[in-house]
Amino acid sequence: MISIEQGLQIVSNRVQAEVGEDFMPAEDISLSRSIGRTLRQQVSADLNSPPFDRSIRDGFALKAEDVRSVPAELDVVGESRAGTSYDGSIGQGQCVEIMTGAEVPAGADAVVMVEYTEKVSERRVRILEGVKAGRSIQPEGTECRKGDLILESGREIQVPEIGVLASVGCARVQVSRRPRVAILSTGDELVAVDQKPGRAQIRNSNSFTLFAQVAAAGGEPELLGIVSDDVEDLGQKVGQALERDIVITSGGVSMGKYDLVEGVLADHGVEIGFDKVAMKPGKPTVFGWRGRTFVFGLPGNPVSTIVSFQLFVRPLIRRLLHARETGDHLLEANLEQDVRCDGVRAACVPASVSFGDGGYRLKTVDWKGSSDLVGLSRANAYVLIPQQEGSLKAGTRVRFIPMAPSLC
Ligand code: AMP
Ligand code: MG
Image (cartoon, rainbow, N blue to C red):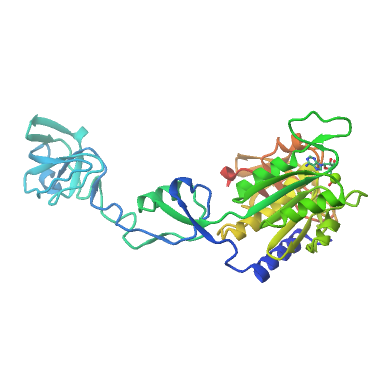
């Protein structure tokens, strides 16, 4: 049995050796569809931002020296509003009425908020508070300057990136093509989710958790359905699945009489990199490849499937996408209770993390083992328990993977 780290290294070596940097080509998509995609271009500012000295208040643009002693009355010589600037330049004793977002006219060096003024007449205003030069003005180019590199290739496009791309005129963006991921659930006992299981049957939940995990990682999932524990049926579906970039099967990789997946993969020319990992849950995780297709035979127990995906498949998808962030965000927290370790296998178990005095605090949830999805649903993180004898005492600092990115 190999360790999780050794397993990850084997996957990584395979990417390096055979696939190279050109694996997932870039494609051009519309900006409005780009959320969650991985950027594949360097993005530079095409203009200064702000593009001119901008007022950040509604008020009057003036010369600060004119209001050194207040109250002071000034002539209102014009207006500058968002979208239409004041063309002239202001002189001594003059001001321009200005709105938020509008260009500060030449000759002005400060803006006094409208709240600190009184209208005297249509063309005259009384300023009640003095200001220093620069007040309420955001100078041109202070956010970024034309030509500045503002987004680098490999960045995941989230809401702020969409805003940046829009503001620099990228109506279309270059992103990584999503790796196509075929998902196959094996097991004679499986029925579709809309069916009532008969005796000794269960509903196929793995196809759905895997579909969601693939999509969340940035891949393009494709459900190939349920396959029976039958060499021919399995062989036919595996053959079809191997056309994709990644194949994920669930179930059929333990030591049982009907665990046929690894043999069928080998029959189809899949080279096996590993087939057992010293982890709990998820020990019988299989990784292999055929040509440029990566293959994962994940264990069938629903929580094992989810955890194995998280640890092995997700980083591969991120890597193929050329994402800068390929690993999980590992955070640290103090254990609230003692946790038993295992001398043979590291564990990745459901846990509940809360934020309290002194940072994150973590406790394992009431969880009945690798088939317990209900227990898993009480968790918001996976805690990583090292392979060692004995137990970790309450208060020990441990690493965890948050389930929802919002915790990062
Ligand atoms: P296996 O790895 O095929 O031995 O399956 C281990 C356990 O996971 C068995 O109890 C299966 O019934 C269950 N299981 C396998 N595949 C699925 C699936 N697609 N959805 C839910 N449970 C599954
Ligand atoms: Mg099975």
